[in-house]
Length: 450
Image (cartoon, rainbow, N blue to C red; front, side, top):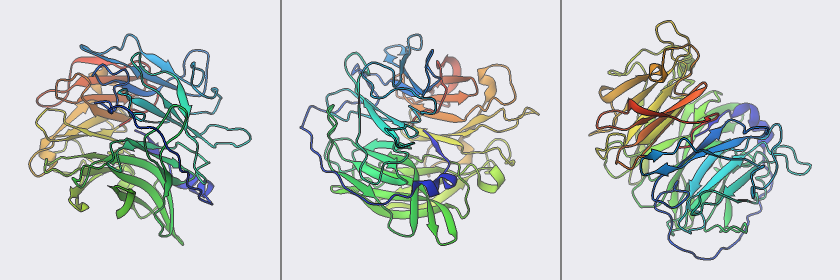
């Protein structure tokens, strides 16, 4: 997952001229069962932004492989632009791993990792950005291929990424932000760099500048849908908005939009999608951490057969939710959805990294909202404090990044939480994730992907 700071950068991202690219790739084997199983052993693996590797700069991705007994945290693998087979070279202000996504893009049975580096200098072009596919194999991730930016996408290319079968043809596709717009790269992909058709996803009304992406199945038709966070400018009117795009056989079709803020805020996590009421339609969770002077909020935009419909908003003032809303708590700074207790309903983790606790500034914490009949509710929420990491401390920022995924193959999503100087993976249980047997994640120096 990544956060977007939109408006100050928007003016620099004006894109002119669109040149769609038409490329083809051969048909291949069945897609990997898990979109994040990089070595094909049937276990989910975890890749995230890490600290720079020894004696290098420019960004490093940490990969921790899953095993029959859980994540192998004792043997992390580090990927960067100085790794063998990875295009480019690490430079001072590169951000290799700024954005991450994964899927079996070449359909060989191994999931591949997509790495964004929007600050990459290419030739004489500053901050053109790159998107690199690091290929999965029986031995894990190795070797990489850069995607060619479509015409108009050549600035800050790779600012955010999302994968899914948006066309429903069985080949995973890739959505990329570049040049302030969203671009759809249709699958299949090949190691030589070819893809399916590439096209711009343009809102068309007023000025639109994309900054964040989230993918999932909302309307129940089996295709992946896309939600784009962006800034919409119409004269002097500047609004931050979420835009739903429906997956269709020919690509992504524009759908409903909703306003997140009627003024420049510039701090939004990428949206996440989960079926919180188990009615067959994915609900869109939208974090608005700057709302009400930074008190924060999370809005659930409910899924229906025709796309997102009505909505409900949660804050720390919602009945049953622990704590109370205070300026600059930033409730909703990070969000992630999956079934953490194995009851078939998606649950939602909400990071509040700047929560002050008992006089300790910015200690932070995470709310876990359990899904159920009627969807999420404050009555089914639990608070996980920073103290699970050890003695309470100020400025720990526990919850600045969160991720719910089943990494132990027990049918319950495990909760990974990042904090200043550390990260913890807590196993899912029949109630809420527990600190009992929690695993420290090595070298977390960025954000967890959703």
